[in-house]
Amino acid sequence: NAGVTQTPKFQVLKTGQSMTLQCAQDMNHEYMSWYRQDPGMGLRLIHYSVGAGITDQGEVPNGYNVSRSTTEDFPLRLLSAAPSQTSVYFCASSRDTVNTEAFFGQGTRLTVV
Amino acid sequence: GNSVTQMEGPVTLSEEAFLTINCTYTATGYPSLFWYVQYPGEGLQLLLKATKADDKGSNKGFEATYRKETTSFHLEKGSVQVSDSAVYFCALILYSSASKIIFGSGTRLSIRP
Image (cartoon, rainbow over all chains, first blue to last red; front, side):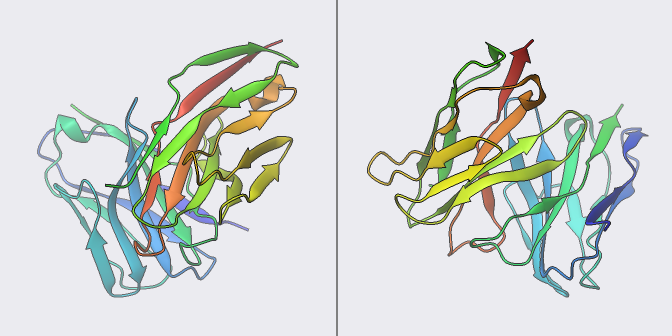
């Protein structure tokens, strides 16, 4: 029972490099989201998707792109990495968002040098 | 706007002590309220939830009551264990804001044997 799988777990990038953080879920959930976790700031929403082909911006979308071509996958792309994007990134999915729980991946710790 | 405010951490207690972590919220509608827990090196997982006023969520000895009059959802446990050491996040979801979970900043709890 995999749940939400994120890869990689750790990544170091140089400023200006691009990369994609992968997220996959096997629960047939319609809703998927990306958050970043920074000390003292809790989790902040980057982008989210309410279903395949539909994405929208969250609280802190600048510097990130997403796409949702399938129900299962929701990759997050960093276009040109900056030190301010050093953070822990979490992907989450849920069946709906009103009363049901969100399931989180184990996170990706990204360092931009 | 909509927001969640948690008590500042870290909180350090001895084993078997009583725990309270305060959480208050501001919301324009009628939110569902959640407590998530993050154990070291892991993603967040749902601890308990309440979907309407006066509901009590409970799990693993933890409880929280949805208090609309004080806009609060304080987390309590009568006797904590070392294994409860983790970061606790209070969160809300509004029906009108699909996929947008609003998190508090988190409270780190450490339990001494």
